Length: 226
Image 1 (spheres, one colour):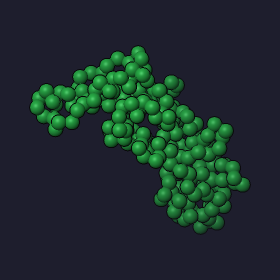
Image 2 (cartoon, one colour):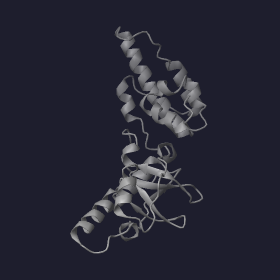
Image 3 (spheres, helix red, strand yellow):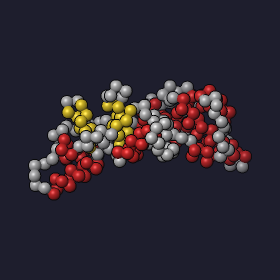
Image 4 (cartoon, helix red, strand yellow):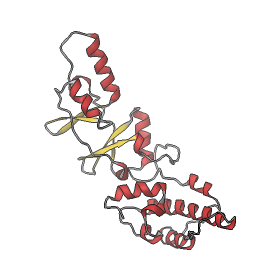
């Protein structure tokens, strides 16, 4: 398995068999909660059923489907789970929106000083979708591409003293918790009209950044609460 649990989990969303040696190993992964395990095993089941159909049509390359192993693992994770459909299309209905934010974080990287220049912030945004502005270790604002564009336009239109990060930052921090679901985070992203969120630990410390682009595409519609 990968040394990075989150990297392995993101890989498993695309192809569970490429990330885990067996369904039992997935079911025993301590980095996943029961809901996440059930979703990945449901996707794996859909893949296995497609393989069985291909075998019946003499199209498979001889790889066993492992369906019985998958069903046994699903029964341990969720005893009330019902077998899914018979075709690969069933995987499109697997809901990954309840996966926790913690699996999709980017490290914070550099932070902006309040009196920092536009040019310095541009270099930071080339490496991250969101730059926190920190004063004495405390996050007081955020700067994304929208704030940077307004900053650059304002500096180009005036001959006044250059603006600083403090002048243009968004004071609404648009954050979520590391253990929020992706559905909850996406509701905040949509409501704040942001492309990325600050992610906080349970004690309020900054844990990382969640970018909209880093989330899996197979998500249920956004909801206000789960």
